[in-house]
Length: 114
Image (cartoon, rainbow, N blue to C red; front, top):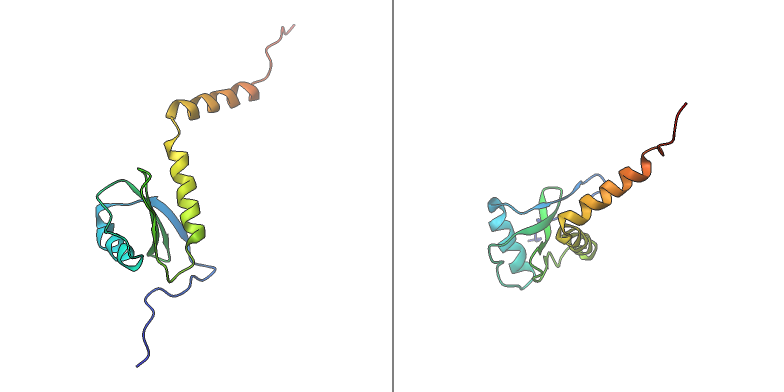
C-alpha cells in the first residue's frame, strides 16, 4: 500500500498567508510540533505561515524556538516569520516618528507667496 501525502508540495498558485495564530490553530500547531520533534507549543502569541490552507511553520513572538514541517521546504518560511516578528517588536513610537518624518519630507516647502 502506497503512503498518502497529506501536505503536497505547494503549487505556484498556492497563497502564502502570514498571520497571528488563533486558538483554533492549537491542533495544527501540536501536529506541527510533533512533526518537528519539538514540545507542543505553550499558549503564546505566535506568527504562523500557511500555504494552501496548511500550517507549515510557526514562530513565537517571545523569541522561543520556531517549529516547522520538516517534510516541506520551510527554511524560507521560518526566515520570513522571524523577520515579521522583528518588525512587530519595534516600538510603535519609532514607526509613528518615521511616518511623520516621511510626511514632513513630502510636504512642499513653505515660502512666501505673493
